[in-house]
Length: 105
Image: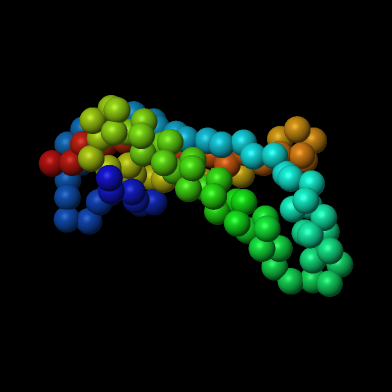
């Protein structure tokens, strides 16, 4: 599956737009991870625990979007964007990815 943040695919033509596809995941924070992250916030630097959690969430959301596009018969997804939102009074984070599924010519 070709994934593009632009609205075209270099060297290919878009034969058909199939519609919006999206994938999302909501992850809650883990108290053990929060304790370590809290300590890192005191001394500064990257909070590796949250970096890993968000990276995993983005990959899972991306996989879900690709699965939806495949079920529609798409060859590519164009105009891909990510959004992140706090959910549950800051106790969880939603990662949403969306784009337009297309068939290439």
